[in-house]
Image (cartoon, rainbow over all chains, first blue to last red; front, side, top):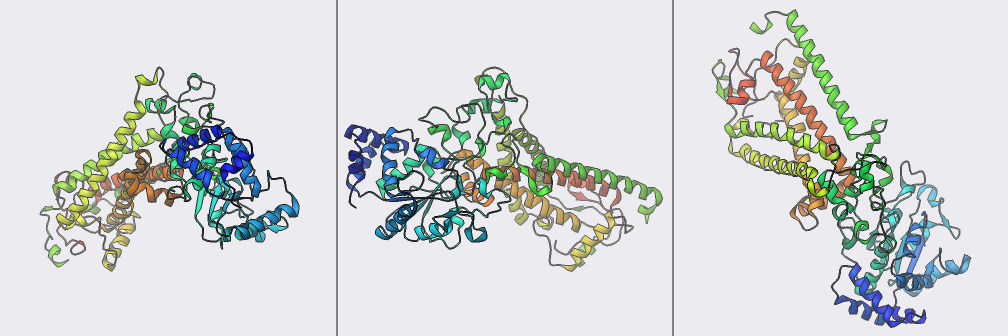
Length: 359
Length: 238
């Protein structure tokens, strides 16, 4: 198959003008100079289309839902149709054995050249029986497809960290892709978020195609261009945080004024994502702009970090749920009580042994 | 031990040099400042009215916290140098003689003393062994933990490419899994240090009254005086 992206787009009835607009917008969203737009266009015109296998494990399909709503009109028309040419069980036309046959076909035809995109994760308990695809545990399909892929994209928090199905007590042993034992050692790009931002997803695919290499990743394997700063660092409500202006109740004046949601448990200060810059639904808004704090959905284990509406994390190890202040305050009070008791005993002891110090 | 046994008199001995005493009082001040501002960062004061441009309260609180954090880090670095350059007592809390049986006997005796099971404590020119243990493992390592996690948190704001991020955040964040966990640990260790401070002040006051050597005046002057003439129990060279 030597069809290029551009060929596919033209076949889909997309004009060259729209195609070039897509290229420059992609360059902009990747943080590249305007000079890169023609390079992206050139890559899309000349390079053979990289096939993408899009597998689904334990997930809710919110990544796919987000992806097909990519703000750029061409993203949904073009990238989606190209991906669906190969394999994505949610949106492809084929079904049943025919669909499953495509996986084998891609793996054998494009050995070492296709991208494996994984949405969701495999449960490992009971030999993977909690997620069956085409009669086989998903973990086997994943390992098989990973064996000869070029790189793996872990879509969303499920594939990247585990997300809700891996939250305590994780009865099915749902395991993020990079921790699956026996998985082929391939480069993994984590694109966390529940779901990830649509434009981030399409941009990662566009980057892979244009430069034929992985985007720069941080230590945790996320593309730096989208995950190098916290929501808080670029939040438009940040001036209210610095000023000390906080929403204290959902219906107070500060909430109406759009003050900082820090006290309402906003996880913006601890969450690495691009929501405050790229935003959602074609840049319309993002959770904080809508008046609700960030829940930290792109962070590892965010379901196990206690309430979405508390600033301090609950610490479950102490039997009852408690936060750092409750634990620390109790410890300090106990130490204080211990000191008082010890001081009392000391005084009592001294009273009983007059002259002891003069020995 | 033999050379120290010669101190078997009530004659004062100069123990804590000026940099050590200065470090002590600076730490006391900085721990109060860091705990108060740190608490207010996690749990801010009541919301301010008016325009955001009229206020910078959180900004100032965080500025004080970060500045104090820098100071306590620089002070610890200097103090580590002084542990090398200063007298033998200057390295006592950094290098506890954990392999010496006599040290552990001393710890045991001190525990018995606090449990009211022995009539009198031993006599020390420097810190008693239990104090060395607590200061080394709770205070020195506790403050070091706060400095490392603190700079890692600071590096998150300073951003990738900053030296704080390169030296601290880049490896500390993956170690703790997430920024939120890191925040929680930083917060919990504040309470650990507060607990240390409570016990530290209590035993200092108590030892001043009941032990066989001076405490509170030594904090200020550096000179240790003794209440009896019997030999001291310090580890040799410690």
